[in-house]
Image 1 (tube, rainbow, N blue to C red):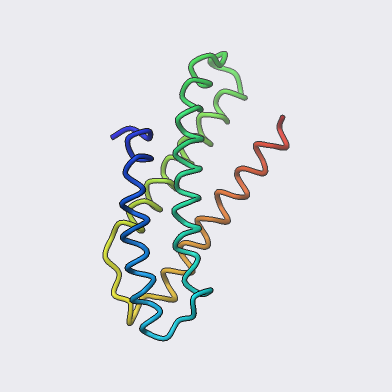
Image 2: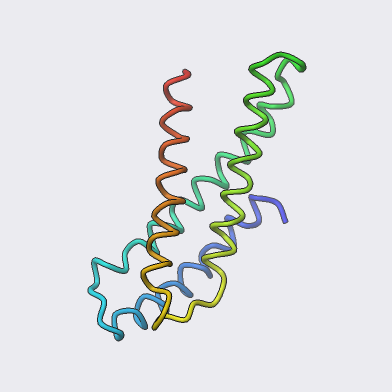
Amino acid sequence: MNHQQSLRLESKLYATLRTKMDQMQQLGMSWIEVQFLLQSVDVLSDCRRTLMYTYAFAFYLVKDDNQSIIFEDNQRDLEMATEQLSEFLEGEVAFENLVEDLALSLNSKILYKTKDNSLAKQKH
């Protein structure tokens, strides 16, 4: 499935995560503690949107120079991180045991994307 189609489907993911957030709050977490889930979907959308445009950019890169190799490596890393985040958000979570692991994993993905995005802005 391409990233544009995935972006359209993320409204369903928001609804699913709102249900998960309610369940987490019923287990004793505060409203603010569960906001990372919505932030994660926002980051996932940003990643998908970024990837949509990187393919066109990569098409026009001069091949076989170091910058294109670095760009394609970064693009591949972002693809993997995006898919991992997507799989994690769409998967079922046993809230009683994995709430802290969920928050830690999602926050690390968010930090990775944020750091990667700030590096891209520095290059321009």
